[in-house]
Length: 593
Image 1 (tube, rainbow, N blue to C red):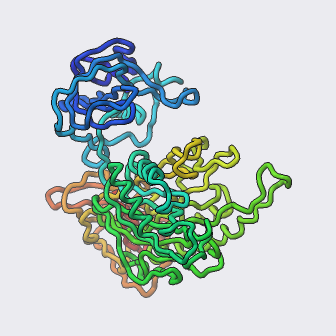
Image 2: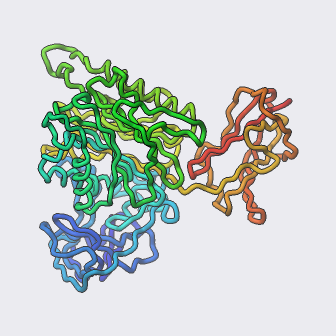
Image 3: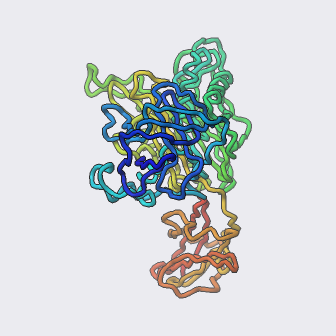
């Protein structure tokens, strides 16, 4: 955050990246304490100015536990400083502005916190294409501070402030490394802190290596209710939300891992944001869930349910857990995984070169099983919102990941710069073992993703794996009731002369603006002509040189003029509209000469 101080308030500079009072002493800076850490606190002006370019928040570095509470109205004096995190290896990190050596006076307590700035739907919309386009080299010494157009400046303008992300469902995997109730409370607390503070309490957390209620004691116990309850309680104690959980107990001593521990995957899910778990009873340790139904009625036979648990691919290994959930009216399919480990492969710096990787064959088989399950899901519903995630114990360029993706899924670790693609450290090699993959339907929507490096590169670890988190925007569904005439809805095929422009009309119950389509849509693809489908001619066409969208407030009607191509004569095509609420709407056409 680049700031100019104008006592008694703190403001971000809207004219450049210079710090107006860097190194100077300031006094009488007021605000409400919004959060605390072990070495300082954040405070924010409750009476913001009208400029989006100026941050209203600031960090006071006390160097020890601060003697203030959230909700305190404070007056702070001290020296203006810029802190660059990361130590010697953080030379490329941006700085954060803070007041050091502060003198703090509490005027009152229990004050309401300043309302968060809404980011996304209904609030400030971050730049989606440009990170920085006017700096030359060092952004701290060149370029124009432009939070409206530059992504880096947008988030700088919010530094230290409370924010609220609208209509985003967050999902992330977390390996909790053989967690059981006999572990010290400090391990539960540390894992909970990572979920709450570093992952920002995702809506859904896929957890791996949850052990049974007595850990490595091998006495036939397979239940893990106590383990889950203890982790959920620690999350609440860390200031997080209330989670519920779903899992399926394994057959005793059949899923690998520490002997007697009965590790398994499970799902934590929040209960306070409109997310709902869809329970379909019948799932057991040996009963396979399957895909039933089609289209919007596609569902799992069991939710939660295990995927092909008796398949030899999962011998002495964890079985994938599939589940259905809903959020903002959207139907989600989540598949949590923990593929077999690399234990048994020859070491990288071992006696034999190249090392034999004997564990790969089983992972490839596991990847094929999960891929085929997702394929059955997308065959039933090509628009299925599927998330496949977890500790896959292999690299993004491996055969296992190629098999798993194979025309269906997108591995989000591949969206990161090469230098950030790791979730694990083995013999000094940073590598990716944990993954989040999205189906086409979700990958086309706006999302933010990161591998959160809180374990792998540190000597002190809550787990040996780094967690990840993805936030996918799932807006509330529009009220779309179908296409209006002259276009007939499926299963009718609309007949029209190739080269004509078709007025495709519909309503969303109000003006939602003209930016209602997901980028790349509407689009049409050639399909096989169905001779058994009813055919109805398009009664009305229009003259147009290109396609375009209009809205008529008088009739509350959107009209997308679809310009067909004369070269499409004697073919059938499907026109696909994808709205930015994530939904698909289709109409079939027979193009005549």
